Image 1 (cartoon, protein in one colour):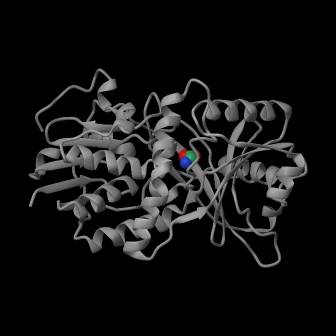
Image 2 (spheres, helix red, strand yellow):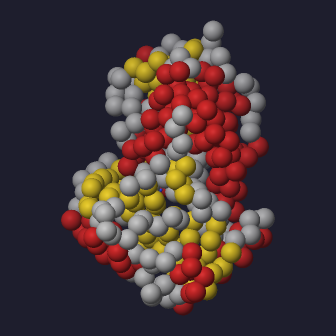
Image 3 (tube, protein in one colour):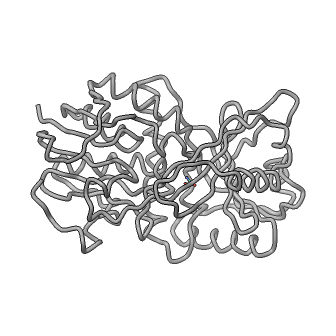
Length: 356
Ligand code: GLY
């Protein structure tokens, strides 16, 4: 049986490990604290269409290709583990002023040219869709994009991996030379460049809140709700008992301290869109390091004959799980997946071949 080491036990590494074990590989995941990094902090939006913008065609295509795989991926996880990880069926992006409303039309037009029609909503339609939104919301855009509960996803992937024979070694890897496996998948998120310095992946800090619904307060939205408030991007992602509010964005190295200003902005922006959340319980504030590349597309491909990188998913790690797993499985079988071509790491000239 051929052996595979997966370095990094977040959602990307865990999904690759599970699928590779199913395909007959003997798989070991190395991670000192599996599932505790940015995968644990994430909101779980699956919104490549709502976040599309003219000129960013590759990002939309890559994201849409992964989004289209999500239903079957979630069903397979459910069959194996009994865990249903999807939490909403659609994403509603709302406009608070005329400039935002114009942006929604731009996004809808662009997605339409790429074969993804979306529905523009007027003020009344928005209220019929999500009645608890602020009266200041003047337009909306509805996209067929669900969301995933990132923590249920981590649990389901761990269970599915265990059921298919994946071994987890809770220890760090300091050099890939220590691994004698036939193949290595490098998926340690923002830390990838510490193991492979040529990889252009840097941490981008993001803070996020988890709010718990309390009896007698308005229920959480049924949709993922996105908005821009005071120039800042906001999202509200439903959970079984509340919602996730995200996210701040800073260049702060590997700092994951939750700041007063971050929490203040997230609460103020969320209340501007959904006033009822002031009565919710503030259950958690957390920060993570998004593994970010210069062009906001991930790096998925061979670094040597033995080492494959699957990292750099930035703000879209949860979205990218099914396509990344398929792409890595194809590479392990000596093939390539056309939909993942834009993520070829060799688009960056500093990534040359090596021998490890
Ligand atoms: N998943 C969205 C973010 O990173 O803020």
